[in-house]
Image 1 (cartoon, rainbow, N blue to C red):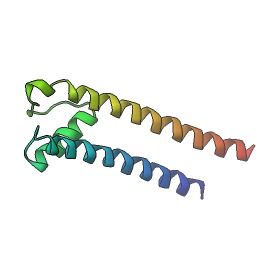
Image 2 (image 1 turned 60 degrees about the vertical axis):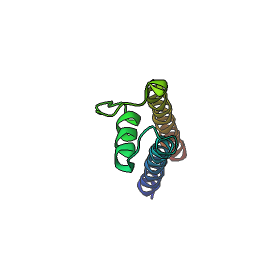
Image 3 (image 1 turned 45 degrees about the vertical axis):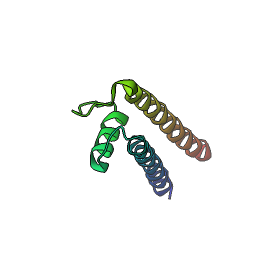
Length: 96
């Protein structure tokens, strides 16, 4: 049962990360920084994961925004890790 709970929590966390990627891609599209949905998603995924290996670049006045997306992603990954550790610690405390 505990394994199932952890799997559900991780699934929710992954869905949350994916939703944030979609929101960033939507922002790039709405501001016309990137014109194509596929390119916006690709750029957002590569920026969010801090891979940064894209051949797409933002307009000059928006350059640096991808760093902000990567920063928020790192915070989200840290938050996810902390939450997962807290859940596992709760399970261990219940066993004791």
